[in-house]
Length: 119
Length: 185
Image: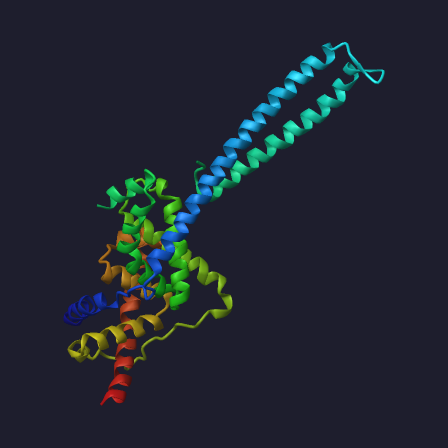
């Protein structure tokens, strides 16, 4: 019991001396620089995401308007009535809509996993 | 005080994170060194841990102390790194022989710098778990519950590791001290 107490006192006296200081004097500055770079990157990603959303929505609205208007136009181009372009246009438009939406969802999932949040 | 700076960081004041870095870097470095035993790896892990903490600061809800939450990140990152270094694994088993009786307490009469050197050398030679347990228990004066929360060890396992660490530490300190005595005197 006596030995245990002496040992305890020994460790209590000696162990506080085991604290190490970071031996790199510029550690704080380098780390802050990394964090600031990361913040800039986040801000730029956030701006790009906003722009992507705007163009995605504009493109979708424009595509929907064209697909509604196209069959109603009684015009022809080099003898081919424009309404015949409706189906190929709808196929291309739907394909683009689905692939772009899929890319958006993948992007958000990836950033939620790595950052926890997305600005 | 920590809460104030955490809120500032969350509100977008990146510079407020400097306070957190300067307050916790030394203890975090000591923890990483306990596990990795290499100052360059420890620095790398420290950087990763601080960035990790910065990115996930919004998930810190204050249920435990900030230090507990942050040191858990450092411990996890350090052990993750240690696992990756399969080739660099060193056998840390340095157990006292049966005839080992007692530590030479005259070490306490030595100059502080020499004491620091001996104690840190001894901690380097202990296994990662044991040196980590000793530093958390005596240096930060964490409770067994805190250590359990930081490391994920059970209460009984933590007690066993600390008990073994103390025995091995006494032996290693005595050995280093004996060697130093021969060199010095």
